[in-house]
Amino acid sequence: MAARSETAVASAGLRRGLLTAGWRRLAAAIACGALSALALPPLGWFPVLWLTLPALVCLLDGAESPAGSTWRARLRPAFAVGWGFGFGYFVGGLWWIGAAFLVDAAAFAWLMPLAVLALPAGLALFWGAGAAIARLFWPPGWRRVVLLAVFLSLAEYLRGHILTGFPWNAFGYTIMPVPLMMQAVSLVGLWGMTLLAFLVFAAPVLLFRATGGGRRADRLAFAGLAALFLADLGFGAWRLATVEVTMVPGVQLRLVQPLIAQDEKWASGRDDEILGRYLGLSATGMQEGASAPFTHLIWPETAFPFLLEEKPNALATIGALLPEGTTLITGAARAEAVEGDDEPRVFNSLQVIDADGAVQTSYDKVHLVPFGEYLPFEGWLRRIGLRQMVALPGGFDAGAAPATIKVAGAPAFGPLICYEIIFPGAAIDAANRPGWLVNVTNDAWFGDTPGPWQHLHQAVIRGVEEGLPVVRAANSGISAIADPFGNLVATLGVGTIGVLDAPLPSALSRTFYSRYRDHLYFALIILAWGLASTGGFSRTKRCN
Image 1 (cartoon, rainbow, N blue to C red):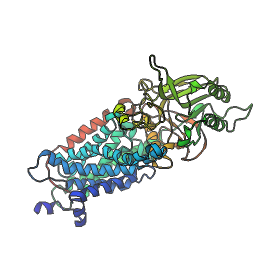
Image 2: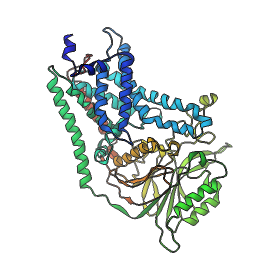
Image 3: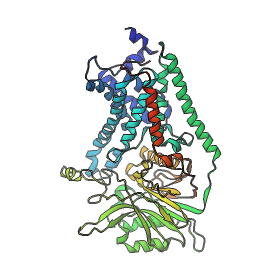
Image 4: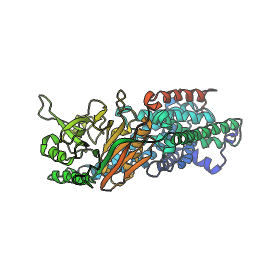
């Protein structure tokens, strides 16, 4: 009883709620995780995390096992709390994935509950493991907050890498809703910002201790974490105020957003209609004898419902549209014959086409979407009736490696097709740094949901990490041009048809993150572990 009174929280009701056990604790964890998803785009309500993350710490404080339990039994309550919080966060942040299964409802609608619930349940395993390992050590006071941040950020890092990785909505994005708060990602990358987010948002729990010898240390730790957050804001303000954004001379971009519904895109007999829509939009404002309104025209991912190499007339028509000296950068499916095989390999590609209608170069998407563009464990899953969602026998093949593409009249660019832009550093050719990033995508699968907003947010932050402008052409929105600081120069919203004309912002010099990648993050992990381990570990319940 003395130990409990020493570690009492200010409110008895809060203590009963957060130190509860069984299904109530799990339900509370799921609810807190779901509320945390409000910090994600398009809302970006990050202050809610100053409530939900302290609640997570308190729930873990109460996740004890009886004395003498095996190590597995000691891990189980904390794993349930971490898993529940992660499950709520991922359901709240990824529910919109279900919209993709309604595009071809006859074939895929039955899989929608599996995607909306099973995917978050699987992703939450990482959070469960991180919370369980942290609780196994669980030092008193402020050190448990640092330890939890270490293991949950490592869990997020592993989620972004294991089994090809799925870093969508990594927790670090929650602390970067606006350019002022994004700039430190140019130093520590996404995973460093993830560590910072867990530290900063869990910090208010250090104010809960009402009595006890550790109260002063907790207050000092809270002040230190508050200062760390203020330093992040200060660095952002300094960087935005001291570096001027310029535009690349002589480059004028035109992005085309055709708004072609996903269920219509691959319908038979629509090839000419779809190409005609692209050509008509691209020609907006063009007058015979006048200079072209663009130097570089950009169309979104898999713009054509056919293979360009099979329709030379289409290339000739494109060439006839393009004024002399201009270039088209477009997404397109590309086929490649395989010796000894009747079926060609088909790639989700980006192609550069000149004013003569000739394909100058191609880039094949390296990082494909599991179940969307290819079927993992294909032989086994096809036997039970599953296939990838792309209407292509066998799905797409993966490209060989990231690339930097030279293009006439502009700096070389780094091509990133759709999903590839969510992977920090991995899809950029580090040996040949580009001058801008081109992200062609098709978010029509997801309609007017948070999905396109989350995708855009992650694309913008890739540019800040690398010190590069990002140009994003999307079939149904959001098409956008962002400068290297994350400011949106121009946008074309979801569900809008039209063109976006804007200059190309200039690149910055290489950022610290672009040079050293995650080395600083791991150095910070080692430092945080060293701080958390001072004084040894204990397994005491302490929501205080």
